[in-house]
Image 1: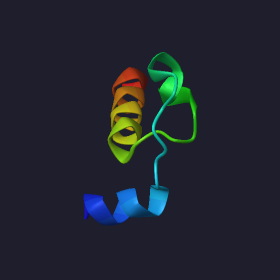
Image 2: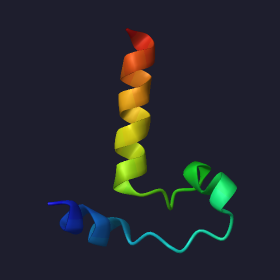
Image 3: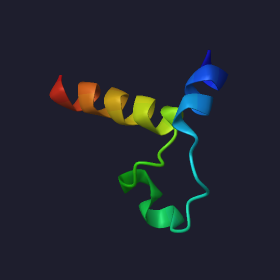
Length: 43
């Protein structure tokens, strides 16, 4: 399941690792972590 989503994203190699999470090249895992952190913060 993750492989299908990743192929759809086609993430490019991040040139700036420290700011890669801001670029649209973020991975599905990063997105899940962000959503989880946001949910925990709201509660």
